[in-house]
Length: 330
Image (tube, rainbow, N blue to C red; front, side, top):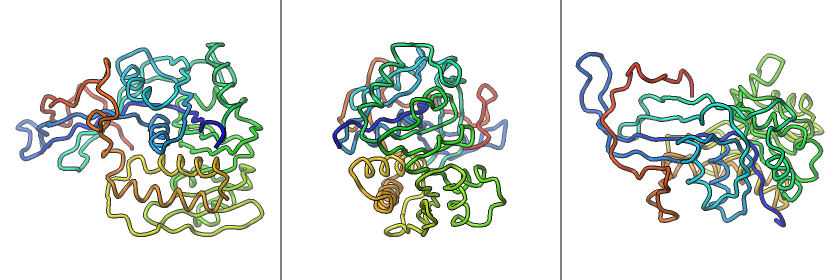
């Protein structure tokens, strides 16, 4: 790789509240979680950037962060290892908190309504746009981690016609990838929503998406079944996992897959080899505990910043409290 891996997309703050649940709330049939620790980490495009940087790669992240506690915490978490091109955000940085007891997620609480500012094809900050364009021009590969919060839409025009591999990890709330991507990496559920014809199988859907998106290749991720890869010209086939993963928490596995595939393509790997490498890395990631296993404050990489609290025991929390909006879907 001569240039950095550039990741374009929406970042959010992930929080895991870890504790134990040994009794029910007296006024509702819900468990009371006695909190023992609270862990913060980047989510979305921020997680993809962090994972790629931990592989020893220079990473530039083009994202939108709010000037609020969650946005400043994200910057603290990312800035030691990732170069950030910060775009304006309208609203507050999205924060997703999972309440977990003995490794089992009981509820997820989503707050924040932030979206990247501007209309598609335009960015409010000229200096930020110039920095983003310079980063794309110097990239060895580009990964779009679209979480439907507007960054991919704002950067859509600069992403067209790149001379380096472009990997697009889509989201149900995001836009369709630009035409000509080297690789598109939807999950099976995302692929169902992207394909206009009735869903029959991963093979047929992957081949159809290659045509519909005018992509060089589409790899539909299938969890413990690996991935289904289809390439332009009609070639397709399964990419199995190297071995059965023993982990149960797959949170972040899609980001690990997309980042590993983009890094492999940047290094000159074939699409088949890049997807096989990505399947292997995602499998290992799940085996090691997924995103929940990341402990940035305790890893020795950097000390807690001004805006991210140390992992201190939070106040015991009973899921179902009306002060929070509980996410309906992961």
